[in-house]
Length: 284
Length: 284
Image (cartoon, rainbow over all chains, first blue to last red; front, side, top):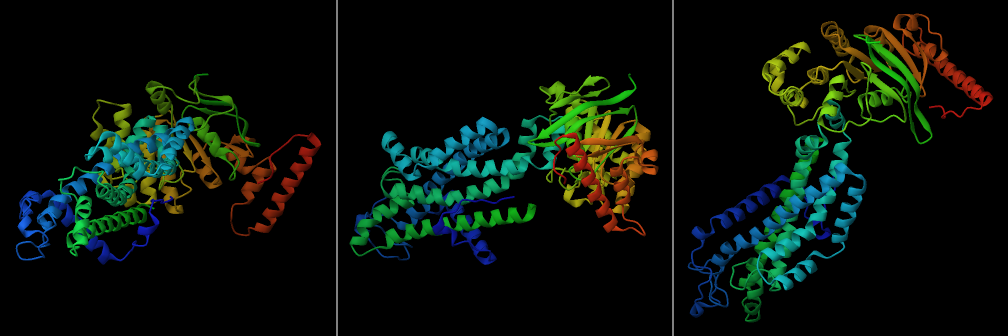
């Protein structure tokens, strides 16, 4: 079977088969998710309380990662920001996976004109840059988390649907499907009970990879001021807010969220690709 | 003619220029066993696929107990009725079982579909017992089973539907010789117990000798010889049948002489075809 995970060229080089990187990535991703889940109990200060007297303070015992230009504790904002920063991509991944899998399964299983319509239709979406689509939708519907998530889901679903379609085509040709047909099972039953579970691991691995890309895109939107509302703690937003601090010769409050974004994306990519390789190795 | 279980007449199927099946007619008596023999590309598998409804015929009819099998079964009732007339055991038991579904679940799925509201657990034990599998095998996934065990599962699955006819498409070809013998004995026992009719698709003349009453020999989509198995194997009339018999390796066997005979047959045929002006597909 062909294994065609979509990779962006820049990040493809990070691929590795060495176990330590995978374990480290898995642990890091796990820690980030835990931080996001437990944010209200972990953050030492209210992430939105401005203590201007303390603005741009360097890291200390009280403020682990220092304080930003508005006097807010960077560590608290980082932990609270993990919530929005992970929730957005999660929404993108869930929406795009559900939509893409539905379209891909329908196109691959039914074939014929439905396949042509769905495949050409989703390829049309591919021609449109996802970030531009998001900017368009955000400028129409105003800022907030939902609009960019929906926009990026639409931009991401063709990757999922193309992969799903090719997997379904390969799976449909396997003799066990013919065996179930002879047994009198309906096409829908075979598809839902047997084909979909058999291709699911690969699709989910692709979705894990997509998670990283969605995180970067959403952070980019936030940086442009198009994502979440101004006061919400968010990593992309923090980089944006930290810009002015860089000019004052204090780059830490911008660099730390940047690092968080990059490391999280790499971690999800490594984990996703490793899962994909594992799935490919096990069943074929 | 109620004692005719299966009546195939004038079956034809072309793929492009190739006459895969060309005017094939045969009958199978109640509880009988018919072998279809031929080399690769002789059209025997296409014939089987048409009979079970996985492929459609360009012309000709397939009747079971006098009722015509239509190419595509529309609706649940028609699908189930067709499944109960004819079941199939596929060539490769490594591919014809869903790798994710355990033996127990495979059988329960089929029983649920065809016999809802009955005691499935008891019937599953009975089926496993019938094909010589212990109840211990019930929880196994296909990959935990040997080739012979998998083929027993495939046979049990086909028998679960209680079909009138069982089509066995090279059902022992993927198994090693000692396992082949076990499976053939099992099939002979099952026929004695259930009076199910067998349609044995094979290239192996030894298999035909073991389990069939009658045999038809196919070549390039046509039937070249038919008759009682013992008679055809003892005194083959058609040169192609003689060639097939001579091709079986044995002491004093000369592969070069077989090759020469094969070429002679092809030449004689192309000469005949030119004389007759009939367009035949190229020799395989």
